[in-house]
Length: 260
Image 1 (cartoon, helix red, strand yellow):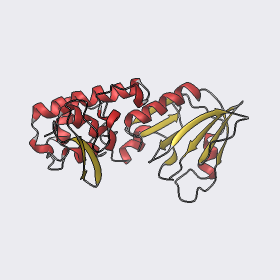
Image 2 (cartoon, rainbow, N blue to C red; image 1 turned 90 degrees about the vertical axis):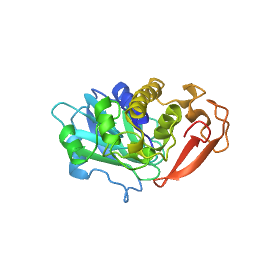
Image 3 (cartoon, one colour; image 1 turned 30 degrees about the vertical axis):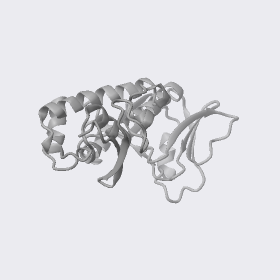
């Protein structure tokens, strides 16, 4: 599932490719029965407007204007926002298509139908209703320690709880724990202030690093877990072996030698 850095890369794409263009039409794609998309009236609200601003909170992307309306996008497991120009055709699995004045188009592509698009009036009100914690790049150290340091959950599960911190999922929780040498099954309330503080620092550094590459993983350092995240692979930090385990129903990848 796309997490904070992947969604930030998508937001940057929208900012570069789709702002200040008048929307002429918003059309549904094919096979949309089982995915949440705006109805006719909601789609018509965008017509005649322009996206002049973008925002992101956790795994949610927003495009709109100061007075609204806004488009709220959650990419789900496989969703992607794809700008392109006519006469090129929309990509396969397009569920929603925005037609801008001129040749520019924006497709919401979602093969597994687990994402959604909503039309909203106010981003802050919407986020308040979604029960999301602070964005992982905005939460300060004290709030981070409060969010994680009192839970008995495994630290990997706690990191992925969107109600506590928004934006971290399976992939980058593994990377944060790998680089801070913490086993994913360690109870969060047993880590202590120093370890959690180091985790907060690592989280910010890692997420910023991925965003700097716009989520092109091949450009990340070779010693990062993402570059050899496979069971049995040699750990490039210590020479140990990468192992896997189920933690909170998700598959964690970690080095069984240096993460304890």
